[in-house]
Length: 420
Ligand code: AMP
Ligand code: GLY
Image (cartoon, rainbow, N blue to C red):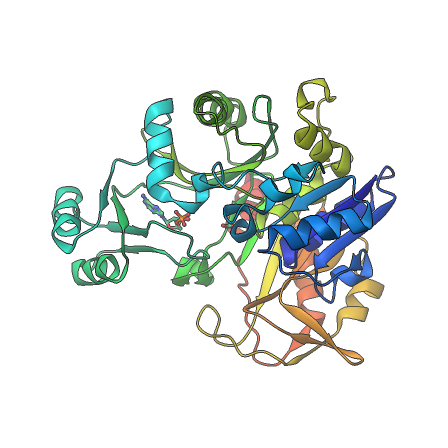
């Protein structure tokens, strides 16, 4: 099978890495890709938001499957264009991707499907927002309705900051604060059958100890030794299947990757958000543990045959990923800095630890930074402690002027599991 992956971040590098290990994948293409993905896939330039251009490229390459990675092309309807051209595609239609593209739409679907989530108000004026903030009290949670690359949410005790964020957005969702640890659970679905993957936890704040601003994600780990073994089954039954059923009932079936961001509160599991695509950096650790061939799984979702697929097989290993970000991220990042030490990681730490590129670019003989999150180092080990050691040993070899990373990814979970 010939597979074309659309996108060019660490998620797409993780997808390409796993697809390159699938014996049924005979050719692997990525558009536009990045400097690291070039090592496992043939790169092609494309405007990922242009459905006609993506379909034409898929046709030219004779792709048997197109995998659309990021949310912006999905919301723009790129999967619809590819599907209309007769090529199987992994990724929801533009209408179904509104589950991520509009927080108000997601709330409406959850209410109709009886899915547990934070109580909320959709507000379009400062007066409405003020009333909603007063109704819930601190800590305040204010979410931009539309896509905001992980930066649209403000959680604060400061009423003025909450009001200011609401005023700066056209339409916001104001909701009750959810307490408790967060879990990311991905599921692959063909619109009817839902196959959950293994849960992961990501670290959204920029600095150690969950301090600093929200980011797209600074690291992740899987499995979650502290989580109830029944969690995945419960979320499948109360969240994932009802949501997929509701979207099918509305005539806009969701096929692709349904990502549930969950809070495990004292009153039970609540949905914080849905995404319509693999999450970054959780994908790096979830796919590192998946033993079943990825190409077959994604194709079955695209073709509507997930019910016939053998149960997924998982490694007992633990996986940890640590994001290396540019100077000033999540503000406007400095780019164009050379990255060295990548060969040393490959020589000294592989195959247990490896680098997945996010914002990188080939510049002559060197690889340079080209975005906020530059790369992530992923490692596997017999447990979280070993996976952490391997990940941080490799991170220490990567040199990028002014770069930053968190030093406490999976630290608490590893210590708790080791002490248990
Ligand atoms: P989201 O983009 O909706 O995932 O929100 C980003 C982050 O903001 C989440 O990962 C949470 O850490 C935090 N957050 C969002 N909604 C809530 C909520 N209702 N209560 C507490 N924290 C939240
Ligand atoms: N890890 C958070 C996200 O992908 O949105």
